Image (tube, rainbow, N blue to C red):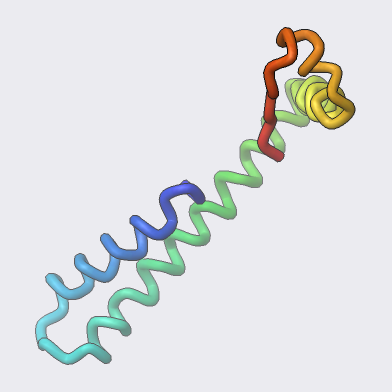
Length: 88
């Protein structure tokens, strides 16, 4: 959801423009602000839920180990010299 944040903002602004009864930009922005707030809150809640799910399953230790190994270059050796990147 964070990757497509820019796209979501544009879609929210277009939707706010469509559902706003008047063509004033101020009323469109007033409609868009709660929609953007709900979108950002949903990103925050989903991140918290995923973090708790990872902690409960123990996968966070595996991801941390893989990230550490990629930082020291160990995975590059296993991949035959190709660069392996993990996102934090």
